[in-house]
Picture 1 (cartoon, rainbow, N blue to C red):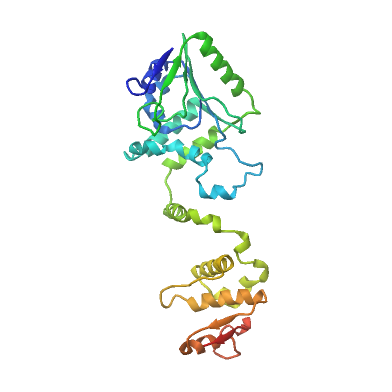
Picture 2 (cartoon, rainbow, N blue to C red):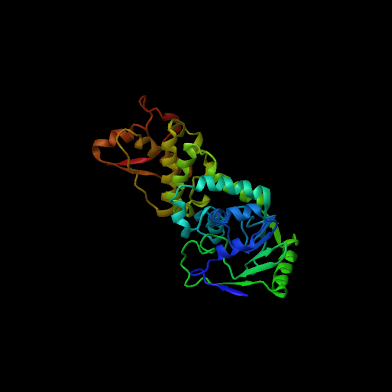
Length: 335
């Protein structure tokens, strides 16, 4: 038995001495990082196989229907954090900044396809995390470990006050942990194979992305905290037929998005301000919102300056200049 404090002696360096050709590596941990792979790349290439168990549900559906829960849209839940740590945890930012992530991810994915199998805990029953090495001559077990990252291996600083790991090499101790691992590993009721999903996730790092995808990812990260505000209860009801109206058909896509957003805010906050540059169709957008509420049998009153009265009266009267006469607007104007 030996204590590794990850200051004077590093877990990663000790592991290198155990990962000899033909060894079998068995890991139960909360997360896996490609930077742990690159730190032990030479040794991992020589081993026979890796069997990895995610101790908490990772890359598995949260529900039988595999639908995202509302809180998952925020992407802050632990499951999402575990999956994102595959390509580097928050404490491996220094390694990320070297801009080698793409090449590392490609090499790691290729190695996983050849030598590794990943399975995930199906339920909420906790599992003790540890690292086991089944060698040709002797075995070793390391515990406790949190994840398989550069931080846990001692190569990067984390936020833990201490990161002391014990290495067991007595056959009675190592045999107990390795036998336990085998029992859990071979129980399909407890574990689910997620190797393909993991490789797909890693592939997303090195694959070429279209500019549109990057743009939408940027939008998501900017506005994701507002996604919880989007609910069917405050979105326009399509059964009203508002999308079949002439005014709606005349709108550009950006105006339709604006009208939908206006209705959402009106239903949520009982008020909204539409502000845009001159000439981008605020009047038509407002008319689309007005028609939606008229189709819901609501009475609409338009308040406007006297100078703009004719502009609004033109669309609620049977005039030749009213291009939306077919929609039969019925709102009142007060100026």
